[in-house]
Length: 517
Image (tube, rainbow, N blue to C red; front, top):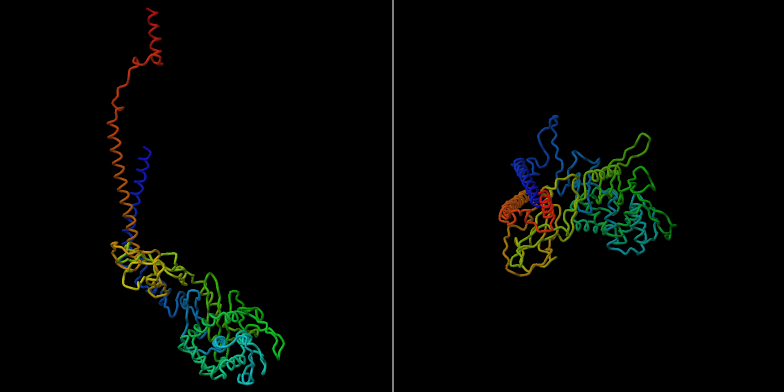
């Protein structure tokens, strides 16, 4: 009886859930029509005037791979150009005039150092010529004519102290002349993919024919940070320069006040590291700096910022607070998201001529992106593309690349990875029905269909339980009627065997009646 009560309770619960789910699904289908859940008639966030009468159209949470995201209305940097880039995921988060012509000032020295380290011997001794010193209007590295130092130490002067004469000395050592070195700089810029850059000197002092863009500076900076030697130098806040033939040992200090308190406490930002500062009256305050937090490694570029004077006579170098504001914008409004992992399958694709009709595939590499905090997962879509049509041909080897997967945000491609089967499939004759190499579960329609199918299964299970309950109920009643114990007549007490308690009591009473008679 207990098991029948349990089945009754379970059956009632399942039927109740089925009824509730049917109503909910019908309601959600009506609510999502005529557009799918997560869609909108205004996908960019633009809409009619709000109730307050504000006629400004907000375009929040839009995305353009070449311009980044727009998650805060009217966010701007007080400069001629700016850029915010997430290095771990190769994601551009924010741009402001990224392709506008700007003067790089001493940011030029990143390219100078890159060519020097790629074409020179770090242990080689370089002598600073009189021409290297006399051809610049500002000697910023405190180097002397005839002074000899290693190329490595010279690069520290160039990148940490921003030495103009040191840049000329490196150029002469590498190319034999400054002019020939400048030609190498422009060739390297073209090699890196820079389209708006032209160099006229190795140090960055103003020249109308010496210009770049924030986007091109990003390409140059990425190449610099990819070099271990240069990365170590640009992340150094000071360097102990050994004695040379003309000078005693001395300490070099960084010009980036965001990364060190050696020179100033005013602009220090504990998360900041590297990379390079720049300034001329024509270029304004320029800065490239990085900061890392919550898995994101941000790189900020600000160009053409002002220098202002406060009432107390102190100067404000606006490149530093603007870069900090850019970092806070990134950390406050974005999060680091792993969208692909080799441990998580992404699709099941058809196999032609195999012992199995399909095989599950997974990304070969892990891919992460920076996305706006609170993003809608429905805005992230995936598409699997096989190398040869819609199926793979058996035999299939686990781990062998058979195609690729692309990850898009709001229809814009963000990342791609190769995909490979997670199991082997031998040659055979299994029947397969290939509809698409795309993981249908990633589509909103398929996800809704999946929800319906779950409740269909529950209804089927409920029906089976109901049938089992009815069968067990009638079977129990039928067997009860046919049981011999149910038709057996009770025995009379007089038929009890002698010696039983009932018989003893009867005999005792009979004996009493005899004695009375």
